[in-house]
Image 1 (cartoon, rainbow, N blue to C red):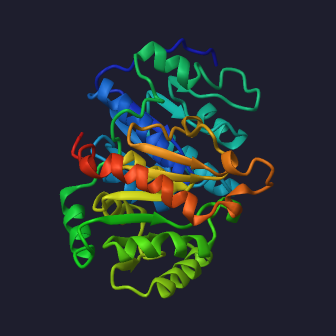
Image 2: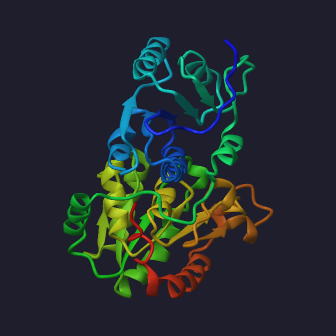
Image 3: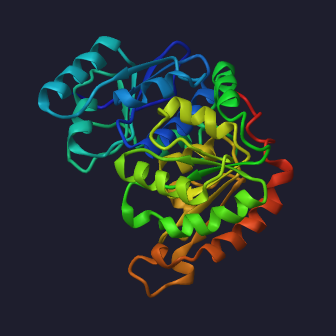
Length: 334
């Protein structure tokens, strides 16, 4: 098959964006798709993702459709190929670089295929994403505006869920994809206790058995009706509505932290070794970070040594900057 030189989409073209996992990457891919749909509002944009992210993506106003599947085992991969072919997409935008995902693009029968691969597959892609973005006049790395939006009915549910908390609410992302990226329980306790005493409401967020256990311990240590433990209680769609109902957000480098930032919520990241969060596309104007490596360069895992007092000082400056305008960005609707 001879590669076609890509141009720009035409009104009515069907475009399939592919991102199976993980949650933070799915969110960032959706952010890129947001800017694409702003530039080409008349295309039909479909996402291919894993089932657990489908409802979250369907709620986004710029996503027209969602199909689901998995890359493994082979039987599931073959089902995905059949779904892609049935969709008759003119464009495939694949944000993965692995072999099985590249083969999806290769066998898709789409006229234009955008992406890159670690495998050498002749004519598997017609352009990489950044080059195609320049051609289309779209900066897929732009994060100057919110790109995750919550339907009004979901906002009402979140308001009801958070109604017993004080006016100032802090969305605390206590987990991470790896325990090496997680701030310790005792540090969370020492950091959050003064905030509770100062009249803050605390919303604990996370998922999975390890984080659920951590959430229970923090909730027990704080022993306050101003703490709402939602660890393990929210799917990703509900999580986006809850974070939008909070005033500020703080947490480890993980998917829900990306969610908070891309919803337009002022967000403070507690990072382990990441010194430039822009590399991970956490570069919204309302995002700030603490890099543990800046304080403990010699440590193998510096976040374990980052004391609550240090984070508290950063949070005080962060809150002073963003509390007066905490809800300004999330009203920037699609």
